Image (cartoon, rainbow, N blue to C red; front, side, top):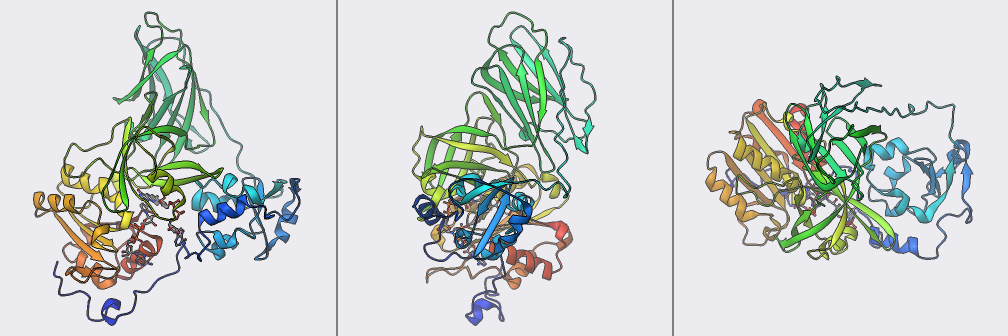
Amino acid sequence: MSKELFPAANSAQRLGVPAPVLNTTKAPLQRGRSLMDWIRLSKSNVDLRGTGPRPLKISMEELAKHNTHDDAWMAIRGYVFNVTRYMEYHPGGESELMRGVGKDATSLFEEVHRWVNFESMLKACFIGTLIPDFTTPRQPKSTSSLLSVPGNNLLKLPRSGKIGGLQYFNVGFKQTEEEVIILFRSDSFETSVENFVCNISDDGLSMHVDFISHMQSLSYFITLHKQVKESISVVKKEVIEIVLKKAEPGSLWDGFGSCKHTQPFKNRLLSCTLISKSNITHNTLQLHFRLPESCHMLTPMGAHVFFQASIEDISIRRPYTVALPCITESTCANDSNNFYTLIKVYETGALTKVIGNLSPGDEISVATFEIKFHLGLISSFSNILLLAAGTGFTPMVRVLHHCLFNTDKKVQLGFFNKKELDILWRNDLETLKSRFDSRFTVDHVLSQPDQDWSGLKGRVSIPLLKEMLSNFQIDTTFVLVCGPSPFTTLTLKFLSDMKVKSSSVFAFT
Ligand code: FAD
Ligand code: NAD
């Protein structure tokens, strides 16, 4: 790409003014209003409830009265909080929080950040429980189906079912004297072993099986007929096969036990051990975690898990993308017991400080993954433009690796960082560039470059995006975007202004 064009003649950078910043879902917090500051305030003796120590029973009518900035109550999943003092600590900004004030904000909360541990974060301003309002439509009653399979060892599965619009799996089993194999089949799901998480209970008598996809997630609880050992493996043949080792080999079971579909779906917590950590830049670590033997979790491309830790008795949970051990080798991969992350440690960060202080051998709670992206989105496109800012590169890692090593797609990475020293895996990107010469290009764009930087400067802009897209035909190009929310919002706006179809764009948000 030609560097002379930038900054473009009429661009913000050339004019010496910052690029426009749109309203975003993350508002800059004032000094002293970080998550750690909120934790400190929660732990102080300041009364954040204003309603006395006894939990109240609160009607919808009462809740609706507390709908102002200075008197703000909010209900989430049946619990009511006085969020008046939390207002200025809310990372999404006060106006965003005000949208849920005086209301049952459950659906708003589920939509925006259902993974946040609000019970713990807002414990100090919990004031009571919501009296359900039966005049408003209620959630459909949770359906649970019991799919137990007769006691034979034949692979004969009934067809999978559909209840209340949701697709379900059917469950069967086969066995040898040493192993019992539980079979999951769905006629409608594109099932892959990557979408399954299974873990055996400590006593070896039960097992959770979760199927997590970009469309729908389902949970099953299996009570096993007899005890199994802690090892587990999963293979995909015609159906998904979960292979368990009998604790007492040498006999045949009458059945595998029983299987219950459980609702609602919850990301299950697994205890993971840090195996190794290494610095890949001055502030970003590569971390290798191992799951227990009794677990199988292969995360799909673009998925993130959630790390959780208790900080001053408040449980904090944040999403982190599952990356790769490296990008330069075709064999680089996670397996069903090991996964790799790239995590930037912020000086004032609540959770990254905890993660940064972990030593090999330490354990941390990791909630199972969530996924919005799927490969089907990009499969028919011959060109892929990756627009990544800072650690927004992490969900691009596996997409980039896949496109280069497993397809003949052309890939261009527009990588936006503050300084040269912030660029993740810079040398490895150079290695890929020389190896995939005509198929891979990288443009580094720095927003706070040192004086000797001769490359692209500034933030994302239309001229910059036009130039990056000029190498590709627009209708055969798919664009992936990820970075700080203002970067993503701005990039999506620019792409839309440039008439790039929204069906050819995906943003990790
Ligand atoms: P916090 O305590 O939340 O603060 C972080 C820093 O930002 C601090 O300096 C704080 O002062 C500042 N800050 C916080 N809120 C605001 C605000 N509203 N405005 C301005 N400044 C603010 N990160 C990675 O490093 N690697 C990943 O792979 C990764 N994957 C992610 C995947 C997803 C889907 C998402 C949504 C985020 C991902 N993140 C990733 C970011 C990660 O989840 C955390 O947000 C990040 O690590 C900060 O967490 P923290 O608790 O340490 O920091
Ligand atoms: P950073 O602060 O180092 O910024 C990197 C670049 O982003 C900057 O150089 C600039 O080009 C651009 N940028 C920053 N603020 C901007 C603004 N207001 N307008 C336009 N461009 C702007 O980034 P970081 O500390 O590495 O943070 C990475 C972000 O990516 C975090 O917010 C994290 O939550 C997010 N992230 C999201 C996912 C996901 O899947 N959704 C995954 C990983 C990271």
